[in-house]
Amino acid sequence: MGMRARIPLIFITLCIGAVFTGCGAKTISRAPDITFGNPDYKHVKDLPRVRYDPYADAAKKPKKGDDIQLSADEYEALGDAFLNQGNFFMAYTQYGKSLEKNPENIRALYKQGLTLLQDKKPGDALPVFDQVLDRQPDFAPALEGQGRAHFALRNLRAAEIQFNRAIALDPLLWRSYHFLGMIHDRNRDHEVAITAYRTALTLRPADGVIHNSLGVSLSAANRSLEAVEVFKQALSSGYTKDTVFNNLGKALCDLERYDEAFQAFQRAGGTAVAYNNTGVGYLKNGDPGQAAAYFRKAIEENPRFYVTAHENLQKALRQQ
Image 1 (cartoon, rainbow, N blue to C red):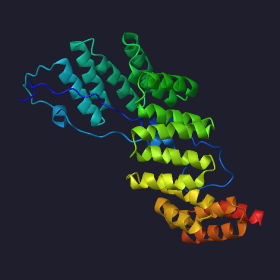
Image 2 (cartoon, rainbow, N blue to C red):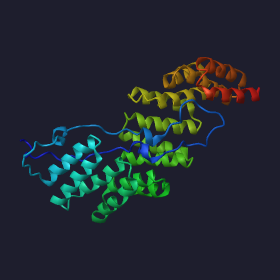
Image 3 (cartoon, rainbow, N blue to C red):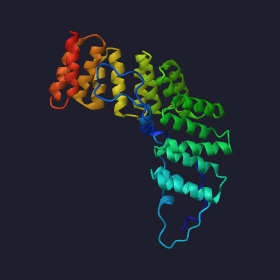
């Protein structure tokens, strides 16, 4: 069968996605009076999930009648395979079977907590990480896991404490630095956030998500020229989500590089969005006449559905 062979042990690393899809991160600054066509960047939502599949065959169901006896490590590896496939229930179950075989398998217990986080159940994940730390108080990844769970639950102060405890024990936990940056940004401590992101990038220099987060923070700190370069680095790393182009367009508008901004916005959401968002840039920079012209072009491009441009046009006309 091949299943009796010892499956190598792997320590899975997970990203929060979107945890951050499930953590509900909000934009750093208060809502502006003018509306962009695309939603603002949401850090946690855009965090990447590490994808690899070393045990894909292990996750295949055995044939009826097969008598398979797995070890604790093999059940753990089977859980890794299911987790990689996004099958959270089966992953959690396999880690539980690993613990039945070996109650001291702290890795499997920790991975159960990560599975609950990935399944957007941070409240259930917290007591699991507590169990890990009861057995091994210096298990830094479990402290990071607690920080991620608190972040998802919007307990930012508790999250900050746990992330700092985690990196004190293991300075290589790049996710902790990234989350600390997001916490500082939400507290409007942008310069501190920038330092945290740059530290994360020393550990993950090609990570486009961290570059995007850093660019957002630089923009918020009125360092738009640096932000433009960082957003371009995010794109060159292969992280080409619409939000990066949108953030790049905003930073270019701040620098009054409107033609480049239009092109970036167009990549993010199409021509109507590009006209509207460039118009917003003109309006923010005190040029309501040009803003109105761009809002009119947005309406011409999409007269039936582009309500946002109508609203922005009225704001521009009131300022003329």
